Amino acid sequence: MLDGHIQLLEREYIPNELPYWIHRKEIDDLKRYGPIVCFETSVPSASEMRDGLFDFYVKLIHDPQIANTLDVDIVMEIKFGFDLFGHSNMGNEYLNGTNSHLKIRSVSKTKIPRNERNYPNHIGPGMPIVVLIQANENNYSININEGDDIYYPFTIFPHWAINRVEITNLDNEVLFDDDSEKCKRLTSHLTQFKLDNKTKKVNGRLFSEESEVIIKGTFNETINVNFLHAALEWNDTLGNTVFQLNITRNSTRVDSYTNGRWIKLERNERNIDLEHQELKKGKRIKLTLTFPSSFKLLYILETKEDAIEREINLDIPVTLTQYIQ
Image 1 (cartoon, helix red, strand yellow):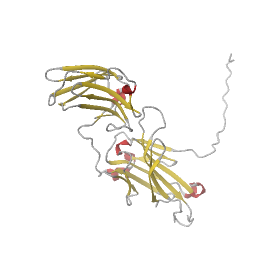
Image 2: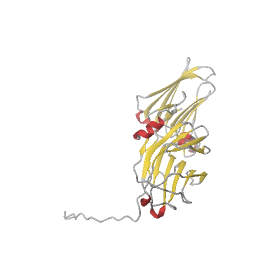
Image 3: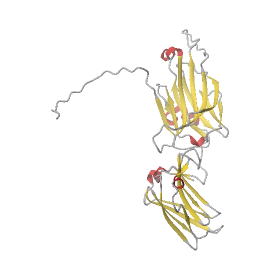
Image 4: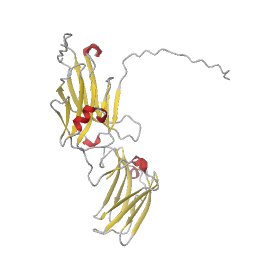
């Protein structure tokens, strides 16, 4: 038995290496174009750079976030490399060494780097910097201190995949977006991304028994509704489909897609396709979706002559939904 005597001991902790700093910004609004992120910070001074070499990284990340894993895609990683060879103690002169560069690349969750490009780094130690990253139709533009834009081609991941930004190995303060007056000034005149009329942003955490999603229109061969997490559209490798409701003329299927698989289909569930009375092309329809619980979907499909009602068990909670398409 314990006798009630407890002693608190203190031990001095001496780290063997510098801490690995991470500044993180969640991207709540996925974008196909426009400003992705802007940040303001400063580069460490020459005396703070060990052995005359220093790197920090800016990572634009796609993280589906359903499971706590380290399997993320890095849509774009910018390495700011500094080499103090040629640095002068007289005045503020700074000459780039052979390792001063910007290296930009993409890295998939398989850890394979792709589309690697190198650019000169004109930033010196101790300098304040403001970095603005925008998505354009065929590339990303990276602007540093309002100089000439650096263009990085868009080839691997769609722009909307970016849902987090991380700046690593930099212990100086970082101000993101509206927390920086300089960023606010730079982005105030820029065209902001807007969703099309087929896509709606929602807060899935607010779904409850009283929630309703109503879709009206004309039936044209199929009706396809996607409830999405970390995605603006269905994609076979990015984001998650909380569920997809697919209605054809004669049947309905509801399934969830994650990690490259349709869950119900993979389990070979019976009655995955629910038959119903034939829907005719050109008919006006009303589709009402309600949620008795986070893992249940009740849908009612109405035409002028008939109503089809089904209750479906979901494999991913509807509360994870961020977009409906």
